[in-house]
Length: 261
Image (cartoon, rainbow, N blue to C red; front, top):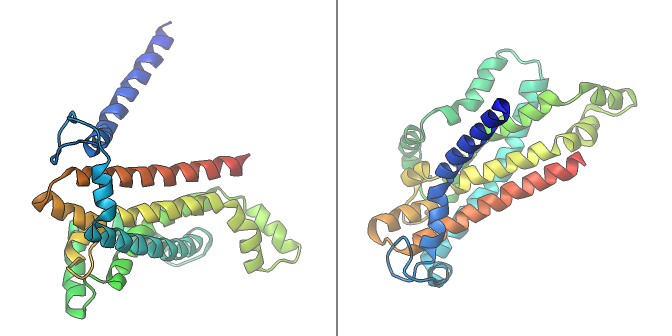
């Protein structure tokens, strides 16, 4: 009975902590449905007006499309580079492998505000602020560590005898990677791609430094509206971003479950 009571108390404590952490995110949803032109909780009425305003506003549309283009391109580039880097770190025989791995993890360790200032000082003189190329480089650097960690963990658990069996049957090293290794770690690669997309799409600190009037992400647009035009549209955009994140993470879990079956 004491053991059961301890488990119950631990479960209640964990559930309370998780609920407390999720509560601010959940409160954004009723705020986005508020009938008044300012953020209020509890809402005085329910309306979808702010979602329609977001979808019909040219500035919000431009910021959203710009962010999606950057996030999708970052996903492709960071997943490719990060997967190859994971193969080199985990499977390769490299001098100074620890230093290379630490360098790959550095963007996750360095504060984003420091990284943003450094990028602005480097990008501004060469015209890479506020354009697609500058954001792609910056967000790819920030996303690659997530790919290296996720794919590297899958490669550590991969049974090398499977690849050796393919090689002994006459497959080349490339064929073994494409036909044996990559299909086995495909769920990890998919999860890494989702992490890379979210790291780019949700990034706000670096975007604040390298944005300008010619190109700004949805996160930078949200910062500007919080300062100058605080309406429930902010809550509507936040709710949609949370929904996109949950949808992507749910898709990864569904893919992983089917893969295990």
